[in-house]
Image (cartoon, rainbow, N blue to C red; front, side, top):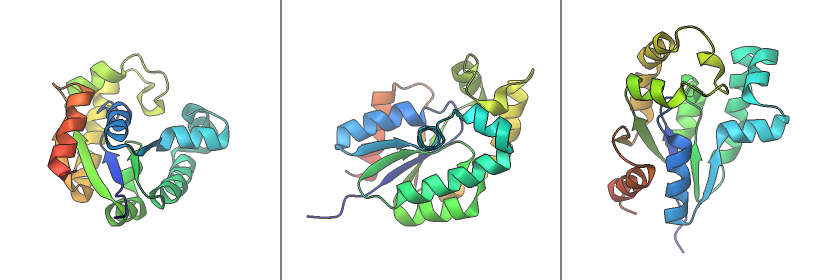
Length: 171
């Protein structure tokens, strides 16, 4: 039997990585993982607490370790944290260990999808839209660099995006 391929979802917060990833994993009969949820499971604390205690740098160290562990598995769909691509090590591991799909979305959609979410430490300020624009300037080129495929998520259901990914990848 052929080795099962991994599918790794990258993109900004609010792009739908977790929701789409669950649909994709269901459709392909693969295990689903979310790197943020795995960090929370391992630490016994939520992401905001890790950020408060260890800062973004400490969080990124944890994230890199979790993504390394998860990408060593076979036959998974992994939703990565929006900032995980900042690490060259993470980008290299994702590119080497599976198919990388960049879920692209607009700033307006990100604002709409994240405005009530208190679990996003980088957006807990008075101007989340500006934060999202700055993050997009920094991270979008990194998502593009690592991606095998790019899929726009704005005007489609999670199920439709999952089907589009399956079609693009040819599974």
